[in-house]
Length: 102
Image (cartoon, rainbow, N blue to C red):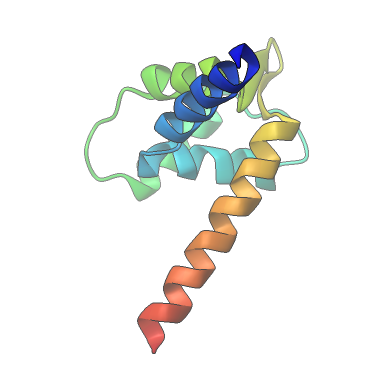
């Protein structure tokens, strides 16, 4: 029973982390990159899609706490679990887009 609770808590943390559009955008940018992206690279790409000022550090830390991304001195990278979850989110987006077209 304890492991079920831990899994539920982990799932809740990860769903909360991807519950903001900016965080999904960050995951998508990191997923598209073959190398680690610096803070400034991420800031530039996010500022193109976000019209208002955002606290990028806060959002990156949320993704790190959920273990969806990691950081090193080279920059930020998406983790394996981050890739898997993002792929499922993209599947859900496609289902919604398909339903909206009908």
